[in-house]
Amino acid sequence: MTRIGLMVTLAVAVLGSFAPNASAQHHRGHAAEPAPPPEPTEPNPNIVALMNGLTWGMSKDQVVEAVKLEIKNKYWPQIQAVADDAVAEQALRTRMERDQQRFTDSCVKFDGQETPWNVSMVDAEFTHNNQEEMCKYDRGDATDFLFFIRGKLWKIFRTLNQGLGGGGASFDDMRVQLEGQFGTGEEVRAVDQYTLVSSVVGVKWIDSQTEMELRTLSLYGVLTVVLTERATLANLATLRRATTTSTDGSSGLTDAVTEGTASDENSDIVDRLRGTRPDPTAPPATNP
Image (cartoon, rainbow, N blue to C red; front, top):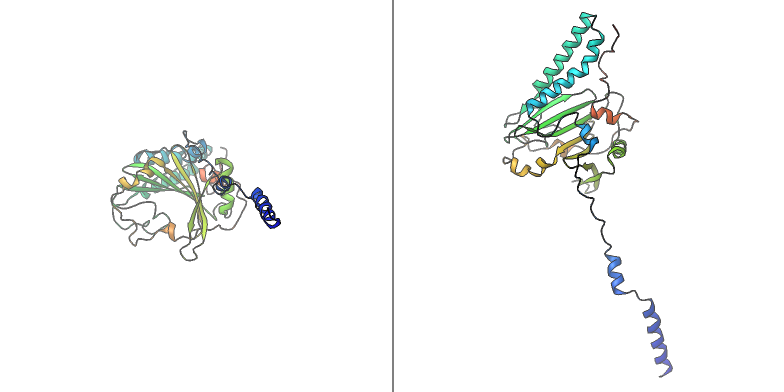
């Protein structure tokens, strides 16, 4: 073999010893994706607690009675505390009955008519002419929009009214607190139609019955937690045969700017969402 031929042979041998194996290249370029988390088989007690005793499938009448009882239970310790003061007791009873009636009067059927909710922060949560209804319960720090379809409760859209009860809270702060109780959530992302930039607009958790999503609506100054029955959510295409939504076709959730608001400590955010924080507008209880 010539000297030049020997050098070429050695070069090929050396280069070949460093060349990556084709099979190894393939596997490195196609790393196995992590397996999806297992499907939940049980309700999450923390999610159940957020429903304040309501259950999916309750009729509107059942929900109305349950909320009226909740309102009564909120006032009852104060009423008992002033039992020897007839004027104070009657004032509290009047407030209690007013709140109960306000909730009952808030219920509306979406039968194609004009309503205050056709263009609102909840206008994407219902459709008209599909046997859908809604009742609104103002808790003070939080507000519940309770949605029914075919007469059954299937969604709770709960807003945390920022500015009430001690300042605002950021989306990130709320996410940290909820993930501390519910575990790491699945990010919900959306692309801005003007900037084409993708950003996180929500965080989602699920259990065997419920999908729970944290959203922020800075346009309205609220954070929201939306609880939805998964069985109904999966069957919406069948339940909603009519497609009419808001009268102008807009969506408050779609149009709202989804970004964090001014940060504050708000260590009681979860209690406020659950409705377990004392009513900040209630008069202090006094011993008889």
